[in-house]
Amino acid sequence: MKIKEIPWFNRPGFKLTRNGVNSLDDAELLSIIFGVGSKGESALELSNKLLKKYNFNNLENLSIKELAKECKSYNKALQLISLIELSKRYNKLINGGYDNKIKHKKINSAKDVKNIFIDKFRNYKKEVLSIILLDTKNKIISFKEGITIGILNSSLIHPREIFKEAIKESANSVILVHNHPSGDPNPSQKDIEITKKIFEAGELLGINVLDHVIIGDESYWSYKENRSNNAP
Image 1 (cartoon, rainbow, N blue to C red):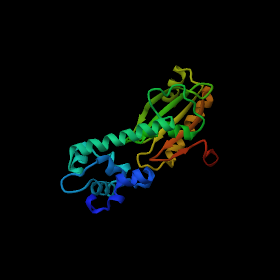
Image 2: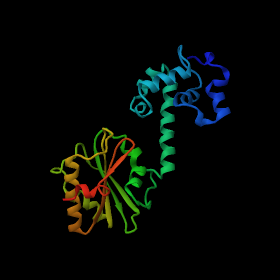
Image 3: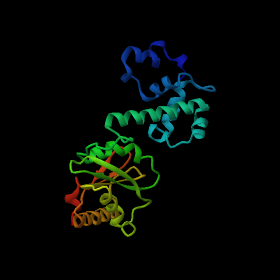
Image 4: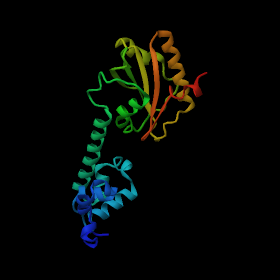
């Protein structure tokens, strides 16, 4: 429906002013960001079309050229990409998210790991195994990204790749963290085998492995939280 066909009191801008931002659906909010439509369709029509076809979580996977084709406007594509990036940055601020100042942040739970790193990890197209190095108070010393890249295989991951970084940084403990590009954080049998292997090596070296957190689209899986189901 074109904006001119909507009664003035039900148009997105007026609804927001009258009832507050929470009264608008996703398409109405996006139409306000766009302001005007392009090439024969209103901003609201364009917003509904994009969200129906892709939803927000898939729009960021499109290139600028692909977005420009969908929006029939290069400027609209730039607006949309900017909106997505601003949303990510806001989410990081609210959740204490990953940035260049993660050092000294305290990790109390697997949920903390998810909140800090989810925006970073869900952009990966392949599985990426990384480690968080912690001090005696569970504060982050550093984050070592990309210990392995690709499908995790216990035969290809040696504990020395994990613990040489911990020894070099004099870490008291480590947390393994990796992503599942499918969006489903539930572990594979290989994930469990790798985790047990690293836990056992940590015990021998005197370096605590606190957890292995797998990050999906909006959720996570924690070895520690599910250890009773996975322990030998």
